[in-house]
Amino acid sequence: MGSSCQDRAVASIVGSQLPRTAVKEINPLEMVVRVVGRVAAVSGVVGLLVWLTWVMLDVKNMQSGFTLPN
Image (cartoon, rainbow, N blue to C red; front, top):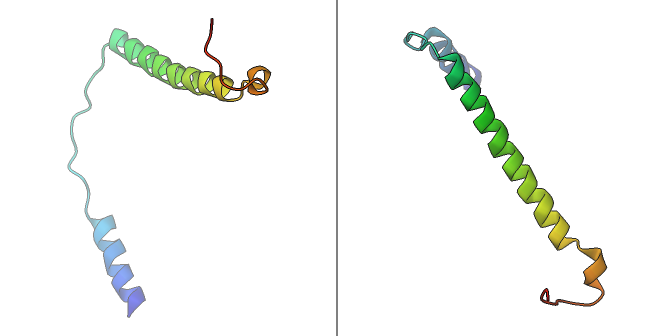
């Protein structure tokens, strides 16, 4: 019983197709700007993670306890 129900669900998913939409042409400048934006976003997140790791694992100052910078 369970397999026939799954078979019908798969058949209904396979049988239905999404309506086709026209592909939007993208200006090459827009494509470059999008790629630069993605690279900037990823590098910002990576930089933040590296900085947080550096601050949290500051072994040099861990021995002296918490101190504020002079």
